[in-house]
Image (tube, rainbow, N blue to C red):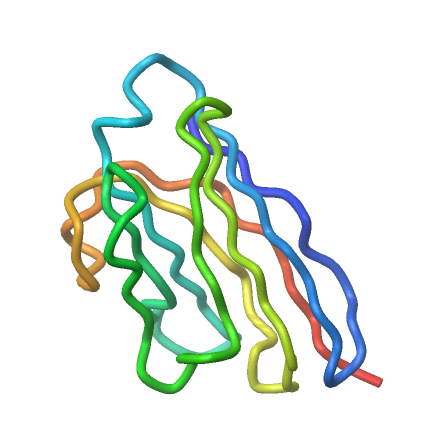
Length: 119
């Protein structure tokens, strides 16, 4: 089970840190990723990280503003989001599976957390 938290309302230029807590003992065997879905749009890849926390991978448009990390001792993956823009408004989902940027590589999904960037 994956449970996201940390979403909310933030002003443009602000920051948020999303967390995704995983239950079970197999967290460290999965690559983790974040996806997002804005109203009326397809779900899109945000970031991914390997089982060991290496090789963070980002959507090209988000490079430099978002940082993915994980703490296997806490069964948690994080997404630090800086310099937020209105276009970042979406429901953010964490997922567990095989490392990559395609949604079909991920077998398990959280319920999502809403991020709204607005003044």
